[in-house]
Image (cartoon, rainbow, N blue to C red):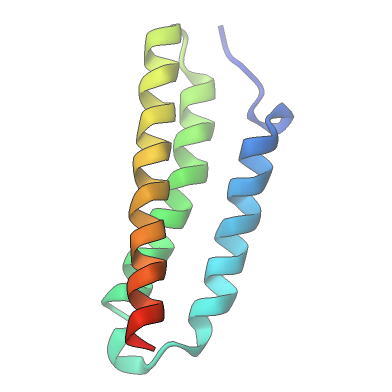
Length: 88
């Protein structure tokens, strides 16, 4: 049973968050381009991508696993945003 991720508000929020992270990290110093900046972008993309992949899974169990992966990536991103703020 495939679900349509485009019907989920959380997907649209995750997509908007990804776009915002990409825009905000454009100004990061060059020495962070392959450090925090890259990790923040990967985590942001991972949130939305896991929602999409989970919605394509057949079983509810698989679907829930991908929702947990998306949540874990969102938590990782929250930490990285906080860390980058502290680092200036």
